[in-house]
Image (cartoon, protein in one colour):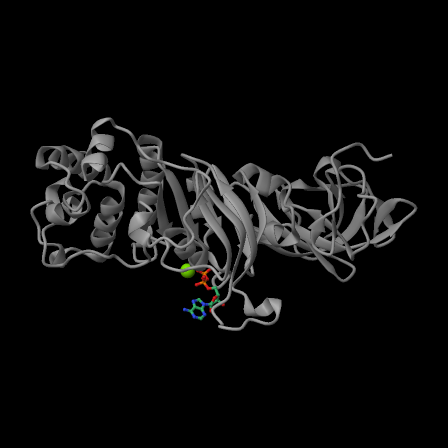
Length: 374
Ligand code: ADP
Ligand code: MG
């Protein structure tokens, strides 16, 4: 207890780099095939102080991964390390992690103040220090006027704010993890809390991992986004990197609205051809590529011109400053974003792809390099 308090006094925040090494997890006692694993193979470092989002569709293994980090679950294989120290078999309370769940976890019979004080009293923090810390956190979350209220009387979104406050009030945690925390929040408050969390990260400076299936939430909160699909990590990058150079067509589809166009193509004479026409790629094709080739181009980088790929306009959606035009070229759909004059349904148009933004994929994985094509 004294040590904890001394660390607190010194303002010594105990954060750590978290390493997941060779991690696999199955909920079955005797997993046989790769499909029996909720997590297939995870190797990942979470750097100290980072703002991370863990993004992926429902069922891809996000909560499983968080629960392994916090110690609620023990992985079937592999290790969880904090600053190189093996934590894999330590219980949650030995890990100094704060976790916020989808639904609020608070004590209904206590006041808001006592709920926020609970994690600190548990660690023997003096009352005057507790009071100042609560004042600070309550102000950030805009719940200062509710401190004397009994938690039972709060609306669901205020309850969730208090849950978040309980996680943020400690300054001795290794990481604060949020598992889809805005599920119960009213849509008009979501936007506000989302930007609040970003601001909190900048002030609290703890490592934060924010789990969501919503790309907007992930991209507004995180400096680094970890994209998961089906028990595996498909890409880690900044929001801009994920948008500009998706490492896998899944990331291309999942991020952006509409998602990246992924088009069947043919490879010959060292180049890519879409419906018989040569398409210039961003760079060289990886020499070892053997899988099914597809061209990936974002709707933002397809333009209308007087020559190029012949297509017919199928649908036009005006979404304010620009329109999303859906075309068809042969048997394939190509969407593009148009600013200014938009064509009409049924029009015959020509499309060009911005060369620096045209990627090639092999069995779904990026197969071009940004070095100049020969
Ligand atoms: P996410 O949080 O991304 O929605 P989960 O980690 O909850 O995904 O689930 C990953 C996979 O593991 C899913 O197929 C889910 O059905 C399965 N799963 C999750 N929890 C359990 C459990 N307690 N027992 C058995 N299977 C589970
Ligand atoms: Mg989940």
